[in-house]
Every structure is written in structure tokens, then in C-alpha cells.
Amino acid sequence: MIKIKLSDSQNIKCFSGLILSKDMLNDYSIQLTDSNDYDYEFLGSDEFLNLSLPLNESIDWGLENISKKTGDYFLFHGGDSTSILGAYEVFTQSNAKYLFKKQLLSKEDYEKKTTLNKWFFGNGSILDRGYDISDETYSKIKLTGYNVAHNWPHLQQMHIGNDNRDIDVCAVYQGILNNGNMDHELRSDVLYTKHRKTAWDELSKIEDKYNIVKGQSTPQQFVEVMKRSKVGLSPFGMGELCYRDLELIQWGCLLIKPDMSKVLTEPDFFKPMETYIPVKPDWSDLNETIEKVLGNFKDYSYIVDNARKKVVEMYSYQNVCMYWYNFFSNLNGVKNA
Image (cartoon, rainbow, N blue to C red; front, side, top):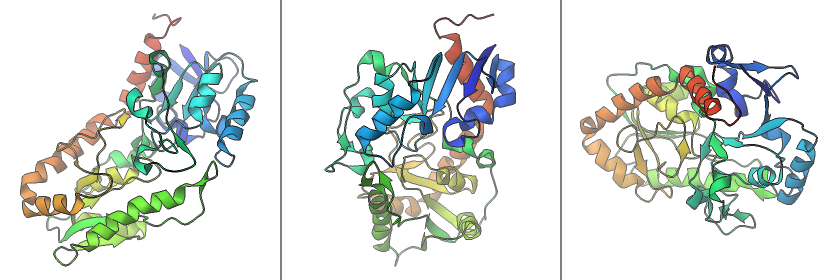
């Protein structure tokens, strides 16, 4: 039995798949424990990242915070995006065995300097960062085996929407964020708003041709719009994956989303023209794509059906357990009974 201690057993952002699989993990010879009798400690990002500090101060703070740790420990970055900013520095300068994230980029894509190490935020800021990662180090940066959909089990339940969908495009989401949110002294809310509002601006150009609902709404209003919509638009936020991706699929909408081909995640649900329709992250082909889809909507209904089947099939907690069973089975020093 492998015994794992979580640094914070309530930290859904970092450990959702493990926490919600706790009882089932026992059947895979993995036990979550609160005691000091453990084999490995999993440290959530609150232990080694502090976004309120300048980057270098955050790194120093994180290293100091975990320097007192004894035994084998893994770092879990619970951020919404593929960015490894701050976490990579702590990982490579500490005794951590592995760095885990819910989503990653390829080693080659991490080399490109981008704002906050988020490829979809572009570049040109005081915090443009890229990483030249060795093969050996990259082999120790792992996926968690779960992502945002595992935070809320109800997202894996499919619902029946309206047969007669009179709304062409659902673009309901928080588009404008003006809360002064800082990531290491850089305002990330401005970048978030630019990406999301640009989609609304593009849709405004075709509003005279289609029934488009955009803006923010209450959760109840959002559900009613999804029930009636043919197409659902889900932009990036602070990260690439979003619970809205699954909500739109739940209610039978055809998901249109910025291209996810750079993003590595497990389960890898996003298959172009199979489970969603990709568009460019700058939205330059959004309206062209929408007009093509709505002009022959029945020809794309198979994507809706595929997506709903894949969500149910892939987002299971048994898969999370098997992922971690396989990880430990291949870990040096772990013996299989």
C-alpha cells in the first residue's frame, strides 16, 4: 500500500481527482492519509507559490517554505493554465522529486518567451518567460491524470436540451475582469479581458444575421440559454481548460473553442472536429467558422454526440485511480505485490 499525505486535504484546485477518488484509491493500493506515516507528501501550490509577491521573491519564499520538508515530496501546481512560471524555478532548485500539473506544453513550446509563460497571452511584457528544459528535467514534470472537469462531478452528467434550438450562438461568460488581479506585479485581468472581449467584438459583426446571446448572466439564465443554443463558445480564461467547455456539452451545444492542440492534459478530451471545433486564439477565423457551421449545422451534429460520449467515457474516477496506479508501478523503489 502506497501512503500519500496531502499538504491540504481540502485543496480541490490542486488535488480534486485524488480527493474525490479517495475511497476508490484504496482498491488500487493507494491510501491518502493525514498521519505522519506516509511514503510521499504531495505539496499544493499554496506551499511554494505566492502570486502577490514579485517573481523572484515568490521563488525565494517557496524555497524557504519547503526547505524544512523531509522525506520524498512532489509539487502540485494547481494553476488553471499550462504556465510553469515560478513553480519551475522552485522545482529545479529544491529536493522535490516531481512537478505535477493538470495541463502542460511540450518541451519545445516552453522555450518560447510569453507573458507569464502563458502562450495565449502573447509577449511584450516585463514578465515574458520561457524555459530551456532538459530532457531529464522534463521527464519529471508530469500530468496529474485529472483536470478541471474532475472538480465538479456533476459536469460528467449529460442533460437533454431543447429539440428546437432557436439561439444560434451562446457566448455567455464573464468577459470583462477589472479587479486589479496581479500575478507577480503584472495585471493578468487586463490580458484575460482582452482575449474574451475580442470574441464578443467579433460576434457583433454578424449579429444582424444570427441570433447571438452574449454577455454575462446568472447561472439559471445561462442554463436556459444553453438549452436553446446550437453553438456554444468557450474562450480561454486564466487558463485554457474551463468548466464551461463541459457545461456546453452537457446541454447539447456544439463546442467552439480556441485551438487546444498545444495543450497536453489527461484525459485528453479535445479532438479537433471530433469533440469540438477549433478556432484561432486571436478569433480571426471565428465568424467564418460560425457561418460555415450554421450553414450546414446537421452536418456537424456528430461532434455533439461524440463529445457527450467522450465526456462520460473519459472523465471517470476509475481512470484517475488507474493513472496513479500505473505511475507508482513504474516508480523506482516501488515493489509490486
